Length: 380
Ligand SMILES: Cc1cc2nc3c(=O)[nH]c(=O)nc-3n(C[C@H](O)[C@H](O)[C@H](O)COP(=O)(O)OP(=O)(O)OC[C@H]3O[C@@H](n4cnc5c(N)ncnc54)[C@H](O)[C@@H]3O)c2cc1C
Image (cartoon, rainbow, N blue to C red; front, side):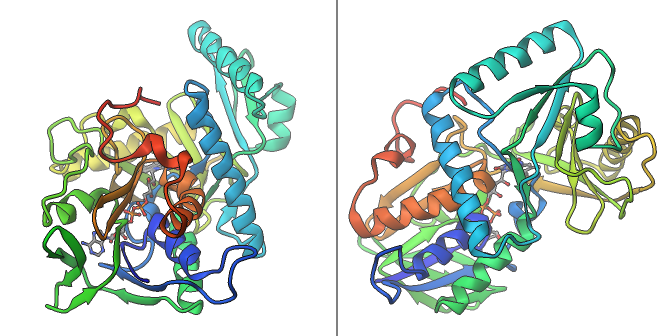
């Protein structure tokens, strides 16, 4: 089967990698002739700017929680297959609460996660000092360590997966955008590129992240994603990257008001949801600079000896399904869509399930996440 994957973010790259590699116990040769079309380069989209925390930290929907713990396990296997590469960092996540309300919510979360069998340990300031010697945690905080969580560097991870797919026989067409889906009756037959070339396929997989609705619309197909151009949209956001810092963090740190982890160039990646409130496609350079300044101020409060400046503030867009859950499945004959928030956490697991589904029929694990589900699932 000729399979065309549009998009080489973490989702498309993991899928291309999976489709070109024989499943354990399967035939020695890849079953598919895979082509990947990427408008820029692998990992250049949301995946390259993502906070990229691999987790199943929300206990509110046990079924989705299980889906995500399976995804964490898929990452461990995938990283082992690459010889535990630098872009995969599993050293855990530290978080804490200081107000009474926040402490109650955190304690409740830990109890529910523990009941689900998820590792969530209450720790004291001394243990934080060992895990993260550079950060300052208030003495009266309730502190939790999630030892099985981690993150990836999304750009290098997507490039490694796309590179391995190419080594396994996939063709990569980079620097060319798919302008529209091509059709024959109601069947999608491939894409037309920006240079006028048609790429034909038996199956076209849309893994174009937040830009997917625009491509799908060219064949009259819709996808319930939050529109980043709507005023007040939750999809656009800002991430600050600092210059290289000696005051590194080892794992992920979720402090009240600031999320921090190491960036791929040895600086810090800084993010705060509350600062994204006024950020949309028309956010002014002044607003972007102000958010960068505020993130840096919060980082200095957290890491007293921080010796790095904000080097860059990146504007990015989340591929945000309206109800928060993945959008996975056939949307027309010859057309399959894989778009999700938490795509970093989910990519290797989704890649395996989608490959199975393409070869062997519907997967019950993907059944709750069909793009045409009538009733939105409860928000995770
Ligand atoms: C600030 C931020 C923090 C996040 N934090 C987390 C987190 O902690 N944990 C987590 O799991 N997830 C997180 N996410 C979400 C996660 O990053 C995304 O779900 C994931 O990166 C989506 O990957 P993707 O491959 O679908 O999309 P992308 O990485 O955007 O890849 C899509 C690719 O398709 C290409 N493309 C688009 N249209 C076309 C076209 N027409 N023709 C050719 N190529 C095209 C683009 O160039 C791009 O490279 C976060 C996102 C953001 C923005």
